[in-house]
Image (cartoon, rainbow, N blue to C red; front, top):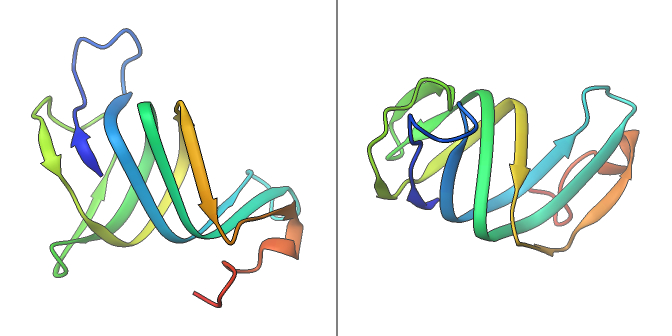
Length: 118
């Protein structure tokens, strides 16, 4: 993520802003296992990005495990954040642009993993 800020005074509490988010080897699912899914080798989200996450876990700086919620992040701007091995729940996203590389839109098991086997 670049340009991350989770302002306390935002009109939508728990919502963060970012200049861009890049997701590699991603699989997104609706709440049900048999529901709508999206898989991609890479997704790039840009332009007035707004997002919220009930919780997410991952590894920061390649060694520090974290569990976070956008509701609990301090209003400190971060120019760049890299998380690996990310898993999230309750994710919402709004952006001007979303580009996918090797993207699959499907239903249920059609998105068993990102194209390319990642």
